Image (cartoon, one colour):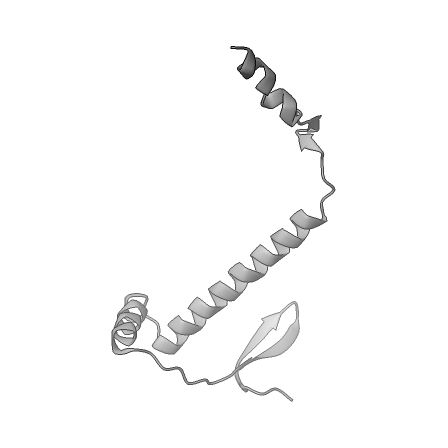
Length: 101
């Protein structure tokens, strides 16, 4: 059983599936509501569709970021830049030569 109501029947790879939606109520400030109505009208969609699309985009953005971070953190450290070892701190900051001057 799905918590939402079915709104569309789609055909994907010969498998029919229902798309369920959930109605929610949100509270917006007057200025934000006015801006959102105008933005939705510019895209020729309902305010509900516009807000849903914004939330879906944010959900996808976060999911993609989290996946990229997991992949990056799972990589083996290279120990340097392009496979070469980094210079030692002492070599980069040669304090002894600075004191000789």
